Length: 251
Image 1: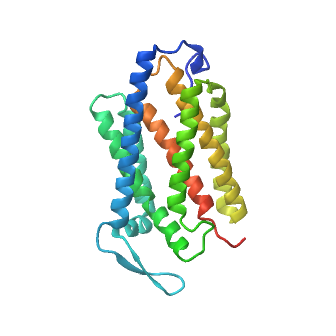
Image 2: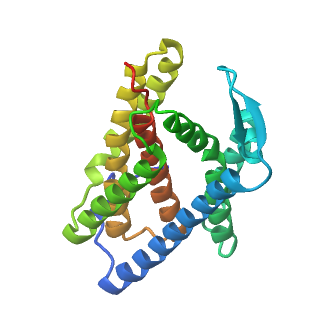
């Protein structure tokens, strides 16, 4: 969760010393980078391991689907349950030394597996020339990396305090969730694209906020939790960018 401390703003307390900040930042970003690599490994395993199953599409053509992706597409609620269990496990274990790192990397690995069906479908439609971008997965990944590097780098170099964004961002999450539920009933491609565009802005804001929190909150000493928050920001940003880039060419 993206909460603030009892002062109402994490910037209300003095910053750590330079040595402490550098050490803490190093731990957070090492864990975050490790989590990203585990997520990539999970996605690649789901997309390329095993003997593909041949499935018939609505147009009558046959498509080879990796077994883990086929399972995820056939049993979405099972995948959601496993994903949520891994997330809550990582959240609850984040302050338990030894277990917390294993739980974090286990969750990020499962996240990669969980996302694999979405990646497969996006690239399948792209191969048929039906998407806005010719390679939506690659380009969403590159744009996410550039956005994260630029936004985090700006906060770390400027040392600006973005605690004022907290309340607006938390409200924005609920607005996005409500809009996504409404989108289920509207079946409007334009509406879904608008949601994705707002989502990109929202999670760019969260990257600024969470990076600033890592830098300025003296009471913050939860490197695994901070890495988990950054990972969630990046994953959500990636998914919204993927939604935009894999949207249909026809409007």
